[in-house]
Every structure is written in structure tokens, then in C-alpha cells.
Image 1 (cartoon, rainbow, N blue to C red):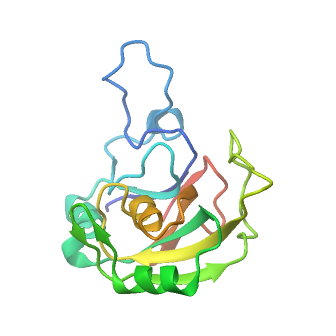
Image 2: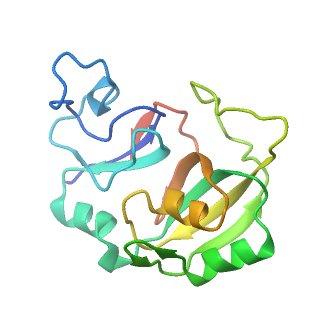
Length: 182
């Protein structure tokens, strides 16, 4: 029976089990949180992104989750600088031109700050003169830092990025740093 682990990855944690690149590094990795042999991340989250990371020991499932050809929806809660206008939201919905080409259309809606949100350490910078707002954005591809690049392209840089769900799996019931088997 294959294993599937849902992990709520905290900010500043690498999406890998070792940090071989830096001798004596104090950067946190998955091994600081998960002690389950032979599981690997299905996809990645940058160290400065938070939220749902799926790990499995099943190569086919890993490919189905991570490979864009399967178009598995990935939903993010995005705190952005400013308040994107209707034109910016429409641009995200239509697809945004990035240096590596057009993105597929995204599902986007404005949301209030999610009620289940945990405090981030360190906190997101606060500026009295610049408002921030939240978006829920669902994509079906997974380019490097795609959501951050998309929001920046429409004039709303990302301040905090949390992956809420991948396909049918979500963060519901998982505190930051916690994991469970599906």
C-alpha cells in the first residue's frame, strides 16, 4: 500500500530532506519535521512559501501530482501588496505573459484573510501607507515561482504565499509544521 503524506510546510523550510549544498547549514529541511522512510515530495514549494506539500512513496502518484500534463488544480492563498483592480484580476483569469511565455488562465477571486491562518515567523512586513489584500488563485500548471511572477506582472507583488490545496487534498485540520497520512 502506498503512502501519501499531507504536510503543512512552514515558511523558510526547504522542500527536501537534506541540505547538501551548504556544509554545516542551519536551514530547516523536511527531515526536521517528517521521519517517514522512502517518501519524496510530489512537487515543490519555495522555502519562502508555506502550505500544503504532498509526499509519497509511489512514483506514479508523484508524477500525477507534480506533472503539469495532468492539470491537477493547485489553490493558493496569496497576500499581495495593494488592492488589485478588476483589470488585474481579469488579466490573471485570462493568462499572464511571463518571460517564459503565457500562463494558462487561472481561477481568481478576492478573499478576506483566511480564518485558519497561522502567524508567520518572521511576520510579513507591514507598511501603514501601502494596503495589502488577499486573493485565492488556482492554477493547473507549475512553473518556477509562477504565482509570485503572475501577481507581480499585474502590479500586485506577493507578500505571503500559502498553498491551500492540491486536487482533493487540503490544509484543513493541519497546523503549520504538522503532517498526517491521507
